[in-house]
Length: 274
Image (cartoon, rainbow, N blue to C red):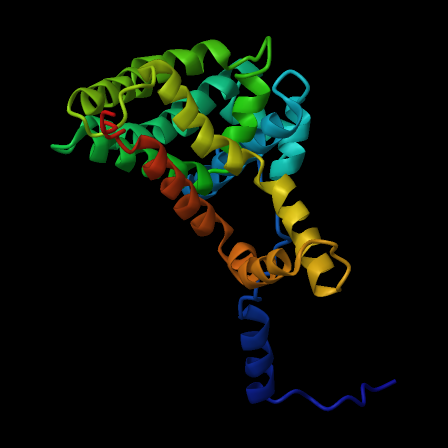
């Protein structure tokens, strides 16, 4: 039997050989999972900061002893292994918190006392305002202090007492004494107790802010709904202050507290003799 297929022309045969020799495009490689190793610098800084933020929040909510590391990792949305990569233990994490969050906080508050004004009273007032604004910008601080400094057995009592006693306390007491000697503030109050009262006055309202903000909101809502049994004058006053307290509570609180402090510190003038 004879072959009936037509003979291939030299041109067609050459073209097919060229196609056969042409290199094929490589297949798309499947994305390999990220292998073990150090994260990039940018990602590492972000993850580490998130872990510290989560630790600060949880320590303030539950306390250091009651907060497991895995819960901090969960709050920061990282794996427990990554947490251990940055912080080998809870002790390491707590020490980092002291060095990188609490020490900078204290440095901001103490700055006016390190660079005093000619007037001790003005220096003291600037310190109180700076400290209050610092707390307002870092609401975790009073919660953490309540849990771990003011409570018996608090894990941060000793180190934070050491930091405050080495910086804020002696400098603030010096300015109080100097202002009293110069007649800039009233001199019938014990400097140590006056310092405690002033610190309490600027810390407690911000520490209790979540509680009394809810109370104030409920009171305002009651006034608006006509359910309040208060006097009409009080109702009008609360209604007028509602936008300020809801929209700028920190600013309103700081202004109010500084006004109270100014009146407390006013020198007592000698009464006329009878």
